[in-house]
Image 1: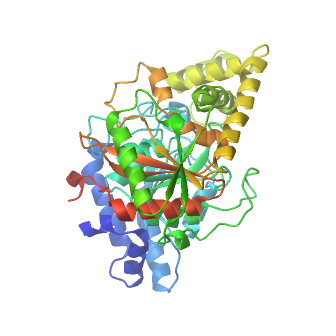
Image 2 (image 1 turned 45 degrees about the vertical axis):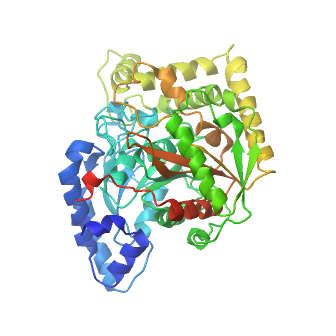
Length: 487
Ligand code: GLN
């Protein structure tokens, strides 16, 4: 059975079709692993065993009828920021405790149509604000490569569950790096698609102009499979792109001869861990050996990206989170009048980091400061986007590190939000520009901790990113599950 962890979803689908395994067996296999290991990893906030077994039974019936769908019978986990009909959805926040959505997010609907089995809801930083999953109101997920370390964030539960084999794949969200950074720190594949490629309907909003749903998988093939299911236009999301979805699998196996890969000078920064730098250089050599051409590019406004993000992101968050007032959702505290009830509910329901962002965001939007901060940040965002437009005139895609460091120790950066914010320097510009970016396993540091490689593409160029990522994966063959979790 342990071979299962090495098989791609496509290979599992073949086995299911040939009745070499049933979805029920596969689902029980993952549920058993969750029981065995998740007490230590703490990736799931709640498993949905009953749902899973029911869905597995239905999948087996559909398979018996000869039906085919890309995820039919495949057990997956979902970040707890995605609305799931009838299943509590908390965003790892006390303020949403007990909230059971009456509808499914579009991505969940699509996964259901494709036949997936829902294993449960995965831990995250509260409202996706953070880089370590330590801001969850409920538990801190551990990094499977070293459980004294954080898995990254905010989609840390998704990354850790995929890395330790507690699901075949997972969904996460990325506003400033929340898919790519935890994927990098846990040594799995994580893609943030082009803004608008995947519908945000039913995704609890953090910063609406930056949020995007994407996938966590153990292989590029699985990334192509899952992205192919969730991508596509949705009339329920007005920012959703109408362009047809490409067949992502058709890009896998194509060579990269003559492909131009841009290397931005601004992404080799002081303070970057030497192992991360060394690994990045080795990774570039792999592309070179496969016939790609490396070209120097410049993204001169990179240094302003983090500041810009923390103005735009907090401004949008302060507005989006205004809806949690104790009336419609989750927690309600008693108060002497309605204003008092709002205050008490929000005081008790939100954690420290969320409050910090609401206060920052309210400040940058307030009259007198709006022009100085919010409007200006919008202009800098345009400059950052133009940097990428200019760079893409010289190259087909851009390669960079994902994070300046590997997984850090739990607790290490909790009292130092600025260091935590600054570590998103390589991922944030991609969200500001709305571009697709992937993190793929690049290797390990001297302590055996995973290091990711980021490939950034032109808008809607997910297919070509996957093409290059697949070549890299096939050449480098980086181990994806720690030995400890193989048995
Ligand atoms: N770490 C970043 C933040 O704290 C990004 C979060 C995200 O992408 N959701 O905002």
